[in-house]
Image (cartoon, rainbow, N blue to C red; front, side):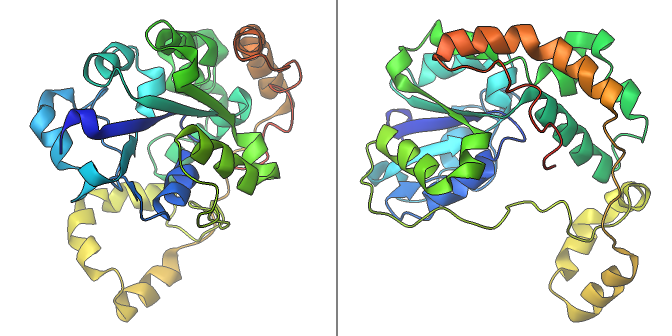
Amino acid sequence: MQAQSIDFLIIGAAKSATTWLQKSLQADPSVAMPDPELHYFSRNHHRGLEWYLDQFPPGADDRLAGEKSNSYLDNPVAPPRVHALLPHAKLIVQLRSPVARAYSDYCMLYRRGEVDADIDAHLDTGKGRTNRFLNGGLYHEQLQAYLDLFPAERILVLFYEDMLAAPDAQLRRARSFLGLPAEAPGPILQKVKDRTEPMLSPGLRKAVAPFKPILKRFRGNSIFAAARSLVAHEIAYPALSSPLRQRLVDFYTTDANRLGNLVGRDLSNWVADDAVRAH
């Protein structure tokens, strides 16, 4: 695999159904993408270029090749690294109402047992840029960092809410941008990650985390599955209160208005709309 053979990146945002987009594109045999997020241009740059290129599936040079890593959007070291190696690449960014995105990100870490139930503390707008939940939704400046390096025609901005309303149209837009024909397998329709799926409680997940490599071997075993079903339940997430929601709306409104001007779309009601629709 050669760097010049990498045609596109899906760069984020996290919790905006980019895995749905990835899997929908992967349904086409002419597309080659690694399954895991590589985070090469953000967290794993120290592993080196050879490691990065080795992650792509065999024969990727002869197909439309790309990868998806959500950390490329909100990590400021990523844009110049992407441009240095892949100045020819096309970039797809899928965005979600930043309030809903922040809450969804919190819920993800909550079910993993990585944060506690004090949602007001974790989504404290007073923490601003030092807070991963809040920083991930400052899309205007994140997108501008790429537009400073790449021509606008090489960046496609999609919206999570459009995907919910018309997934087929969303996938067609992405495929057209990448130069793929419209005739292709349709988008996956089921949720990639369903928050209603029975899971271990956050506390129990944290307790068994050191044993995950061992337990992974037993996945698919009927006895293991039966034992897990006894302790797995749908997670009850801390609610996003109306006062906290309003503080988040106020925090993001200016950035969202700037984003709207940047992409030529009216986003005046986007931040406040249906903020907790899904996790």
